[in-house]
Image 1: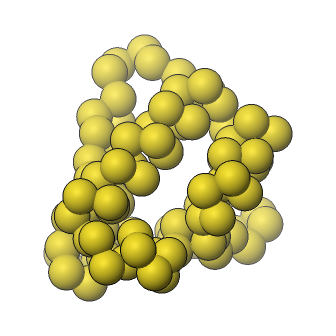
Image 2: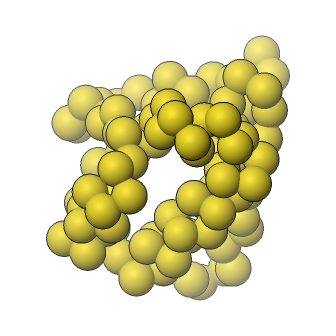
Length: 98
């Protein structure tokens, strides 16, 4: 599995998840910490202004209390995926060519 974060300027951060690895709340929290550091390094103005937005889906690991607390502590702005949506997240359309 590949987890990828990008914006209009290009790739911000990506990580490959090893085969058989489960993305649980602890793994996702550590990933978010690395993502925040990458945003701070690659998009310093967005980091400084806190103008970046994270699009989460409804995975349990994204809704865990420890993750929610981290997002609140870092003032992370999020856009949620509509519940039970059968569609890809809108941003996924930019990852794959037609």
